[in-house]
Length: 67
Image (cartoon, rainbow, N blue to C red):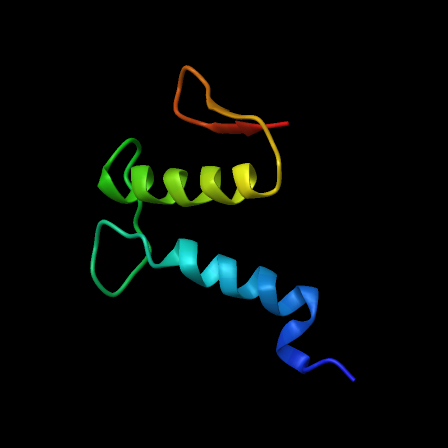
């Protein structure tokens, strides 16, 4: 039997927690548009998408787009 932490839901929760760590303010999640925390989260998300074999780009307003 697979370990409980190997279930897909645990991986999703782990990644959500990882993205939540990128904040512009201590003790809360505050990510200012195009700020340092936003850029760090974008870089991690784009990396995950590339690892999954997706083509990744940023659109004109800083959204991550993957196909």
